[in-house]
Length: 390
Image 1 (spheres, rainbow, N blue to C red):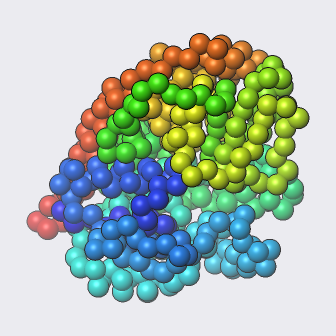
Image 2: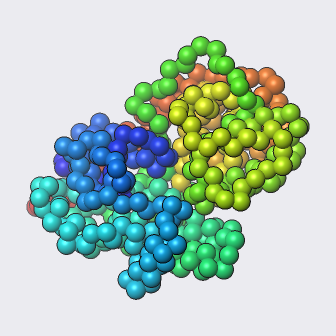
Image 3: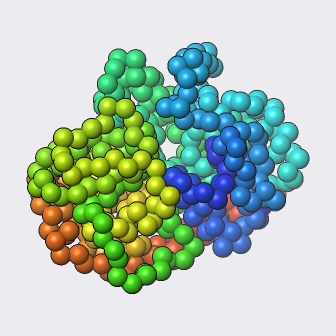
C-alpha cells in the first residue's frame, strides 16, 4: 500500500518541536505496518527534507506569525478574508491547488492519503477528495482557537481567533466526515470531533524516538526545575502564564527555575530564581539537568510531547491534569495537581528528594499501542480500496 502523507512542513530531521516529533513517530509507525509512505509539503526556508527520495517538496515557507513582518501578517489576514480560508491555511497557499495536483501526478499512483492535521488539508481540500483518506487530528483546532480568543490580549487578535474557531470547526467536520478513519492523539479529542466510535477512530500513543532513551548513570543537577517549549504557540503561552503567575509566587525564593525556548515579549517573573535562557543546544541534556520537570499545560487539546519525553527519560515531574492528555500510564514519580499552591509544594518536595525511574517500560507500552492503532486505521483504508476496485 502506497500512502501520501500530506503535511504543512515535511520532516527535516531536526525534531525541534512537538509537532515534528509526532509526525516522525506516526510516519515510522505507518512504515512498520508495511505501508510505503511518501510525504508532501513545504520545507522551512534554508532546510532540506530529511528523506528526499520519499518526499515531495512544494517549496519553502515560513508560517510563523511571530517572525513575520506586520505587512506580511496583514497580507495573510486579507488573503484569508478574501479566500474564506483560515489564517493558518492561507499561509500555505504559496502554491496553487493545480501545482499540488501536478506534484502528486509526478510522484506516482497512491492508494490513499494521510491528511496530517488541518492546516495543509484545509488549504487544498479538493485535491485530496479523489482517494480514501485517514485524517490525523493533532489537536481539536477549533477548540484551541476558542481558548486562544479568550486569552487574547487585544480585540484584533480576539476577533481573528474567533473567526479561526468558526472556520476550523467546519473544516474539521468535513475532514472527519470524508475520512475513512480518524487518528487523534488524546481520547477526549475523539468525542470533541464526533468520531468516538471505534469503527471511526483510534488514539495514537506517541513516542519521541524509535528507541527508549538510554540512561547515562547519575544525573548532574544544575537547577531545581526546567521547562522548554515553543512559548510563542498560544496554548503553551497560556500554560506558561499560569505557571509564572499562579505557581511560582508560592515557591521559596531560592528555588531555581530555568526556562528555555523563544520567549514572546512581555513574559517576565519577579521571582529571583527564574532564569530565561533562550535557545539551548541540547534540549534533552537541558531537562536532564533539572531535579524535577513541571508539566504545565492548561489549554489546548491533543497530547503533550514534553510529557511523553519526561516519562521516557524517567524524570520526576509535577503535572496538571491537562498535561496528561493521551497518556494511559503515569509513572509513580509523577504528581498530578491543578492547584497552584499544591503544584509548588509538590515541586519543592520532588526537588528535595529526586526519584528517577526506568522510562523504557513506558516507551515499550507506547510503541506497542501505537502500532496496534495504526494497523486498525490501515485495515480500514485498505478495505475501502478493495471495495472501490471491485
